[in-house]
Image (cartoon, rainbow, N blue to C red; front, side):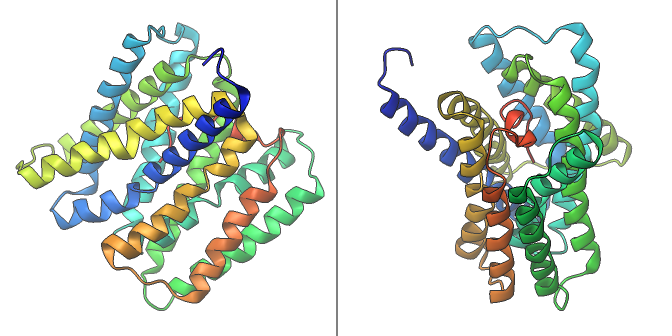
Amino acid sequence: MRGVPAKQRSLAGVGLVILSGCCFGTLAIFGKVAYRLGFSTPQLLTYRFAGAAIVMWVVAAFIRQPIPVRRTLIGLGIMGAVGYAGQSGAYFSALHFIPASATALLLYTYPVVVTLVAAAFLGESMSWAKVVAVALAFVGTVLVVRAQLTGAAPVGLILGLTSAAIYSAYILYGSRLLPGVPPVSATATIMTAAALVWTVLTTLSGQIVVTWTTARAALLSGFVLLGTAIPVLTFIMGLRLIGASRAAILSTFEPASTVVLAVLILGESGSPLQYVGGVLVLASVIALEGPGWRPARVLAQAARE
C-alpha cells in the first residue's frame, strides 16, 4: 500500500486484524455445530487442515511466495505435526465437555504462559507490566475454571488448559524458527504437516470416510475459509500495516467474539463469574502490550487454533 497516507494504512490494518480476530472467534462455534452434525474430532481436523493447506498453497503460488528453504522445512513440520496438531486436538476435544466460550478463554492464557517461560529460560526481562499481566491472567483463569466446576467435566478444563500449554510451546519454538521465513508458505507447510498427522490417525481409527450432506459440506467450507484461511491472511496483512504490538492487542477480539457468538448462535449462558474471569484474561493480554512481547512477533507467521 505504498503511496497511501499513513492514517489510512493504520485504519486498514486495524480493520484487517479485527476481522481476523472475529473470524478466528468462529472456530469453537464451528466445532460445536460440527459435532451436532455428526463429525468426530479426527474427521473435523483432518478435513479442516487438508482444505486449509490447499487454500494457503494456492495463495502462496498466486503471490509467488517461495517454498521455505530446506533447513526450515523440518522445523515447520514439527510445528505442524506436533504443535498445531496437538493443540487443535486438545482444543476441539475440550469442546465436547465445556462451553465454547470457556474453551476460548482458557486458550487465551497462552500469552502469559509464554511470558513466564521466556523470562525463566530465554533471558527475557520481567517488567512490572508483565507481573501485573501474570496476576490478572491467574485470577481470571481461576474464575473461569471455578465457574465451570459445577456443570462441566474436569477433563474439559484440563484439555482447555492443555491446549494453551501446547500452543505456548508452539509459539516459543516458532519465535526462533519463523523470523525471515515467508509467512504464507510457512503457514501452508505447517498446515500440511498437521493434515498428514490427522489423516493417518483418522485412517487408522477407521473414520476417514464421511457421509457428505449439504450441511456438512457447507460447514466444512466455512470452517476452512472463514475459520482458518481468511483470518490467517488478514492477520498477516494487518500486522504489516500496524506492527506487532497493536496487532497483538487487537487479536483479543478473538475470544471476545467467541463469547458473543456462543451466546447468539449456540445459546450458551455463562455465569457472571466466568465473564469477569474472561475480562481479566483479556486485560492480561493488553497489559503485555509492547515491542518485547514474544508472541506478537510470530503470530503473523504461525497458524493459530
